[in-house]
Length: 613
Image (cartoon, rainbow, N blue to C red):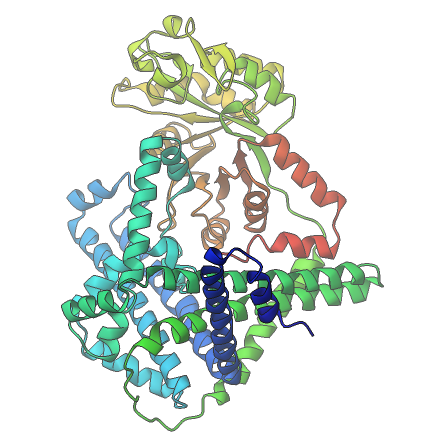
C-alpha cells in the first residue's frame, strides 16, 4: 500500500529550496490534522450510542415539544388580539395598538433564544459526560436544572447577540430547529447583491463577524465550565485565539471538506445500488428504494452528529479546563434502542409512502412579472406574447393606479429604473404613461394599460395572477372601483388577485367574497388567519409546517420565486399549489423530465434537495 505522506514529502524535495520548508510544514500540518481527526473519530464511534441518544433526545424534545408549543402560543396571542397575521409590515401597528401582545411576543422571542442557549449548554455538557464515561439522561437533566436555576443574564445577552450574528456560519456544525425561520429572504439578498456598495458592505460585515466568531470561540465554554465572568471569558478567549485565526480556519475547512466527501461518497454508493436494483423485479426495487432512502436519511443525520461532536471535541473542549461532572448512576443505552427503533420506523413508513405514489403532484406554473428568462421587459405586451406561447397556468403581473384613477401594468413605484424618469405612476395619467418606453435586458416596449393587457390575455386564452400595488397617493376608492369594474370579469376568465397589502385582501373580499384573492407574505413568522383564498410565500422561508397548516385551513400556497432545479424540487416536495417563477421554460422542462424518468434512483436523487433543510 502506498504511503501518501512519504510520497508527498518526496515530491516536495524536488521543488526549489526556498519552497521546501513551507510546503513540508504545510503537508506535516495537514497529516497531523488528519491523524487528530482519525483519533477523534475512533473515540466518537466507541461512544456512538451515547452520542446518538444525546442528539435524538434533544431533537425530539425540540421538534415535538418546543417548536409546536412556541407556534401555538404565538398563534393564540394573535387570535386573542384579533391580529390576522404577523409580518414586518404590521410590527408598528401591533406595538402601538396591542402593546401587551407585543410585549408577550417579544418575551416569547427571548424565551426561544434562551432555549437555544440551553440547547447549546446541554450539547456541550452531554459531550463532556460521554467523554468522562458518565453519560445519562438523568445527569443531563441535572445539568440543565442547574443552568436554569443559576442563569447568568450576561451569558444569555452575549449568546443572543453572538449567535444571531454568526447564524450564517453556525449552521455548519450547530443547528437548532428553533431558529429555522431566522434566515434572510432570498429576494432581499438578490436586491442587495446587485448593488456594488451593498455587496462590499455585506462582504465586509460577514468577514468581520467570521473573524469575531473565531476570536470569541471559547467565551461560552469558559463561562459554562470555568464560571468566568463575561469580561474574563472574552479576555481569555481572545488570548487563546491570538495569532491562531488561520489555524482554526484550516481545522474548520478540513472538517467541512471531510464531511462533504463522506456524504457524497455515501450517497453515490446508495444511488449506484438503487440504479442496479431498478433493473430487478418491481417489488425488490421498491423495497431497496425504501431502505436506501432510509439509510440516506440516517447517514445524513449521523454525519451531522459526527461533525458536530468532532467540532466540540477537537476545537473547543481540549482547550478548556473542564471539571468532572457529577456522577449519576443510570445507563444511557436503555433509551438508545427504542429511540433508534422509533426513528427508523418513521423513516421506513414515510419513505414507503413516498415511493408508493409513483406520480408527482406537480404545482401550477406561474410566470413572474410576465417574463421567462429575461425574454422581454417585465409587465409589457411583447413579453406577454412570448411567455403566453409557453402556456403557463398563470402569468403574474403588477398593476398600479394612475393620476386619472385608471390602472397601468407596472411593478416599480418609480420609473427611474426602467425608463430613466424620476416619477411615480401616480403622478402621470394613463395616456402619459402609455407613451413612455421602458427598457430591460436588451428589450424595449411601451408601458401597457391594464385594459390592454387584459384584452391581449383574453386573445391568448391566458389566465392572470393580478398583483395590486398600493401607495399613499392612491385614491380613497381605488379598491372599490377596481372590484366594481373588474370583479365579474376576473371570475369569468378565472383570473386571480394578490397583494402585499392586507387592506387589498379585506377590501376586495368585503366587496365580493367570491373573488379569489391571495395574500403575499415576504416572511414566514406565524401562520396567518385571514379571509384570503391562499398565500404567496417567499420560497426561502417557506416550510412544510406552513403548507400543512394551509391545507388544514383549505388555503392554497404559491411559492415565490423558485428559479433553480433544487428550488423547484423543494417546492414540489413541500406540496405547494403553484410556483411563481422567472424561469417558466426551465420548470416546464424539469417537470417533463420528472414524468419521463420516474425511476426510484431518480426519485432518490430528487429527495436530496430536501436534506439540507
